[in-house]
Length: 118
Length: 115
Figure 1 (cartoon, chains in turn blue, yellow):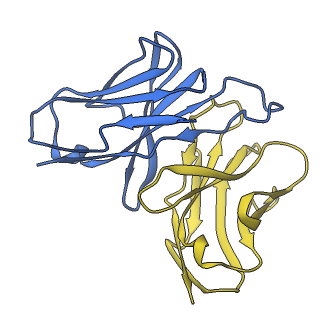
Figure 2: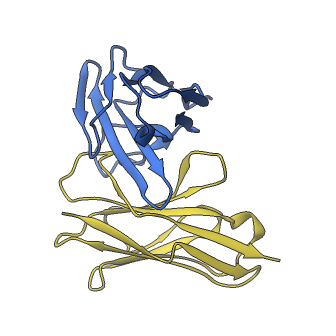
Figure 3: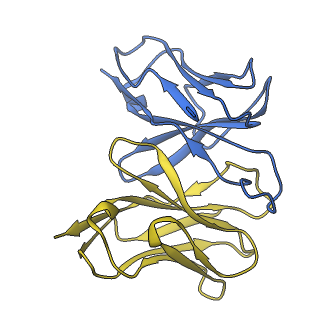
């Protein structure tokens, strides 16, 4: 029962390099999200998706792009990495359901991807 | 804009003592409320949630939280701390009418438990 899997777990980039973080979930969840976590800042939503082929901006989308070509995968891309993007990135997924459904509104998180941009 | 305030970035208690982690939100309409826990080098996992109904919510590992509308609070408590409770705790709200996953997180409270 894998849940949400993120790859890679660690990555070091030089300023200006590009990379893609992959998130995969095996729970058939409709919604998927990318958050970043910085010390003393909590979690901030970067982008999210409510279904295959759809994406939307969150609180801090600048410098990132996303794609949801398959329901189970959600990719986060950095086209030109900057030191300000040094962070721990978390992917999460959830059901698209009403509040009466037991799993509604509950996010399942991956273990995180630690990115350092030099 | 909605906001979540967690009082105290670090809380230290002795093993067996009461745990109280504070969370206040700003909203004119009661939102959905959550507490998540993050153990070192892991992702977040749900402790408990309040959506509707009973205002005292019980979660995993002996934690509970009470929604108090008049105080716009959702404080997390546990009667007796255990060493395994050492972790970072995040309060989160989903604004009323907001999309799932568009949670607003507090900045977190790191709980230390002394033997």
